[in-house]
Length: 114
Length: 115
Image (cartoon, rainbow over all chains, first blue to last red):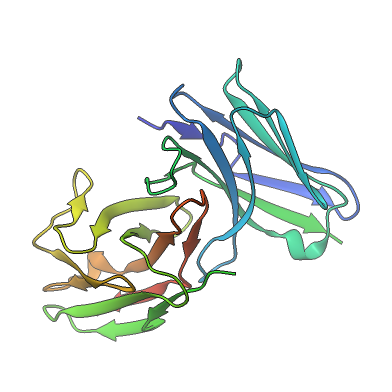
């Protein structure tokens, strides 16, 4: 049972345009959501997160939107840069204190076209 | 920021041998660490939760006798792949959360190739 889903395995976006990566979840107990970026043969690096009490969090070029009623979140990257090409994972956490395992989505491979 | 290291970064071993992978939190203490594996073009699969001073908790379908986990100190967890076979070839990644912070920090991963 895939509780966190990323239905687009890949996405190509022109440099300078907006990249929108989507993520859906089924478990209503999740209360914290995170986006990670991963390059090949490296561990994931944390990008941005959002608590379920918010519907938007922004950090530079990255913005995460959360729609709790739809159980959907998205990551917007604008403007997209070639260095953004990587696999992006969304993840969810159901424990407020952080020492709880993350449930990951299947990932979306983002390719920025110069 | 918080740093998690893994050693070795890559290892090649013969079928039937055992391989130990270390995961260290470099500037913080981690009572819990997580071990993942990633197959090519697939998501991160949580294998087990490593608990300092107690037994690891394994996810369904993960053989605890094959993937031995030891969390002997607050900064070190080890994963030993015993009697490795070619199907164990994979990318193994550990992570550690910091108490009070939601984000987990990941190590750089270990590429295991069993020949």
